[in-house]
Length: 162
Ligand SMILES: NC(=O)N[C@@H](O)C(=O)O
Ligand code: NI
Image (cartoon, helix red, strand yellow):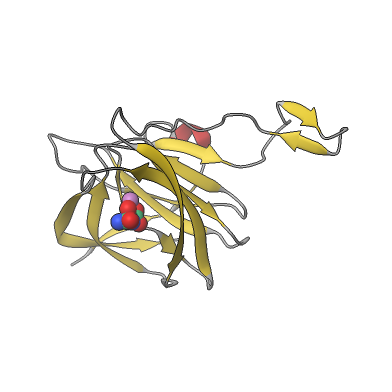
């Protein structure tokens, strides 16, 4: 019998232990370009460690369907990782607390349109999980000389639903 996780709406408070939300919510920090543009300034904690540097990549991921079978969690011990959607489609964000170097009970969140996320360094998470095609995302994460990847295969999968 699979364990079930119900996806929650993504809110800053709920996501705060795991990362940042990257979106244009609320008032901008500054109006620029002659008042034609609102700047939401410096809204994510990027962290690439002393040996790494920031990189921008593009991921073109297959869309998944719900209920989604979660059987793997991973983390990046050496740096943060941000997923910025290049479409309006919501996507699934799965995170878990660290419990003695293994993930605890996962939580799933459904983004709002045009919301991106930034995982803090070391946050256990599910891989990029689009729910619509194209699953194209800009990814800002660490470029460096380490694998920067710990994977944890779940002995019993979870079914993620909305
Ligand atoms: N492995 C990789 O580049 N992607 C994962 O980190 C992911 O979170 O999707
Ligand atoms: Ni990742």
